[in-house]
Every structure is written in structure tokens, then in C-alpha cells.
Amino acid sequence: MAQNESLGLLGVESAHWYVHDLERSRRFYTQGMDFKEIGGSDPDLTARGRQQSLVFQAGDIALVVSHPRGEGGRAARWLAKHPDGVGTLTFAVKDVEKTFHLLDRRGATLMEDVQTLRDNRGGKLSWFSITTPFGDTTFRFAQRDGYRPLFPGMIFHEKPTGGQNRFGFNRIDHVTSNFRTLMPAIMWMEHILGLERFWKIEFHTDDAKDKLEKGSGLRSTVMWDPESGVKFANNEPARPNFRASQINIFVEDNRGEGIQHLALGVESIIPAVEGMLKTRAVQFMDTPDSYYDHLGKRLEVFGIGRIDENPDDLRRLRILIDGNKEHSYLLQIFMKDAASLYDDRQAGPFFYEVIQRKGDKGFGAGNFRSLFESIERDQKAAGRI
Image 1 (cartoon, rainbow, N blue to C red):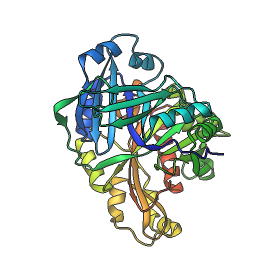
Image 2 (image 1 turned 180 degrees about the vertical axis):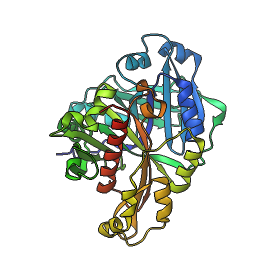
Image 3 (image 1 turned 60 degrees about the vertical axis):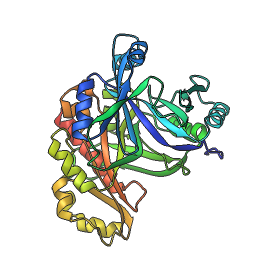
Image 4 (image 1 turned 90 degrees about the vertical axis):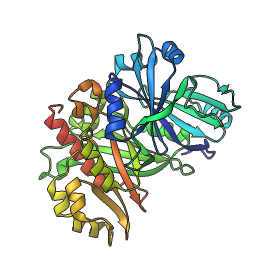
């Protein structure tokens, strides 16, 4: 049962990556996804933290990417255990003291007391962090009162470099994570974070023998904060082919449970995907022609009477569509994971989703399954299953 009192979340403020190759990440974000590089760690923070950080931004999406500079820093410790991955999610909150005391009362593992810093312009930043069931990923909660940098020691470039957000990214739509054992994470989200159950699905690809030989499956539960709209989609493998499930393969490749992908919202997905493909720095998972051969029937089953997009464009770009009522649907596509993109296992099994919502606020069951099958095909092609 979820807690009654809200944590006062405002949304996902930023995600903090740890990577082996900082320049590769810079090229991916600025050239492939057209994010601006807005700043980075100053020399003092780089030396003290033993890592160099860059900040990329598009719309309300802020991504911090850090690379070790010597031993002993957080980036070096992360990369000694894991491939590239998201080590921290930061959430903006209305009242950090209230959030802190609620989490403390509910039994959260707090990593510090509330920290407060003021800048020379009178701005104030207050924050604290907690451990989570998401492997080694921590959550930070921050309240800003006129304080601009993401955190102390981060400085803005005089002029942002890189992209201009021509693809129309706007916000982090949801966070998807993989677990070997799902229920402890769901209970933690309910009883510690106070989230509510939003949606669930369970399937096994062995019931579609024309699609995948033998197959595997999952159970998934989506949790959300109704006040802010923050959503977490959470997966675990299903029997009987538990070990062959792409969820289990992710956990093995990641060397622990953790965040599988972030879904980034866009204003218009067709020009966004066309633009990213032209950069040649981004690749997307494929979808079989049969998906589009039966698209008309799928839309009829969903109850979607009409769509604004040309179905031929969806087929050409391999964009998925799902929904549940007349002219209310979502469009989405999934990038190849970094390990496949760079042919480098140390780049990790993380990937991005691109999503455009046109009235539908849920998670399409058909698309959920199509994503699962696409990942499984890619893992088999790479010899990872």
C-alpha cells in the first residue's frame, strides 16, 4: 500500500552517467542527438572528485557524464564494477526538508543529512541522497532557490557548444529498470517513495512461435507519482527460460540490476528520427515488416479511429504506435544499446527510447512486446544469448 503523504516531487531533474570514453559520449550527444554542451566540472571539482564531468541539455533534459581522472573517485569505482551506466538520478522537490523527514520516517537509507550551499548571487541549493534497490544507482533530491548550476563545482560555458535541439527533445518521460527479483523493488517504491501502481503486463514470446524460437518472457509493473507524473517501468524475467530472458541478460551484462533505458519525449517523432538517422551517430532497433503489414488491424483492435501520421512513414522509420481509444495514442522507437552501437561491451547495455505522446499517457502492451522481441533479436545476433 502506497504512503498517503507525497514526497513533493517536481520531476526528474538530471541523470548522471559514468563512462569509459568521455569524448565518445560528447560526440553522441552533441552530434547524434543535437544536445547542447552547456558546462562541466571546474578544475577544483575535477581534482577533488577525481573525475571530469560534462553537462548536456535539450529542453528540460539534463545529462551529466563523468569519466575518471585517477583512482578512487565515484566514476572509477562505478566502472570497476559496471560498464557505462546511470549512477545517479536527481529529482527536483518542492521542500527538501519535508522530503528528507518523510523518507527518514519510512525507513529509507539516507546517505547524508541535508546539505545546503549558497552562491554569491543569493541562490540556495539544498540536497541529499539515498541508496536504492536499483543496483548501485543512487537517488538525489534537490531543492533550488535561484541556484543555477546542477551542483557545486559545475560551471557554465560562456557560450554553449554542440547542438541546438533541432529534434525537439523536451523531458524525461519515464525510467525503465531491470531486476532479477521485482517485488522487493516494487515494495520499496510503494512504502519508501510512496509511489502507486500504474500498469502491469506479463507475457512470454513462446506463445508466438512464428516470431521467436523458444522465446523468453517478463513481468513488468509501472509505478508512478500521480502529483508529478514521474513514472518507473520495472521488469523481471519470467520462467521457464529465465536465464535466456533479455532481462536476465541485461543484468548479467550490467553486472547487476539497474536502469535499462530512459524515455525522452519529443515534440514530433517523425522529423526527429529522420534527423537522428542522418547524423549516422544514432542507430535504432529494427521492427519486422509483419508489424506494419497488420498495422491497420492493430489500430482497429486498439480502438484508434485515425492517426495524423502517414503509415508509410512509420514503416519506413520503424516507429511503433499504440493506444487505447479514438485519436489517442503514442509513438515510440528504441535506439540500439551502447554495446551494440559501439561494438564494445564496456559501453554497456543501456539505450534510449524516443517517445511522442498524442493523448495516451500509458504504456502500450503491443509496443512493450515489440521492444522485448527487438532486444532479444539484437542480443541473439550479437551472440549474447
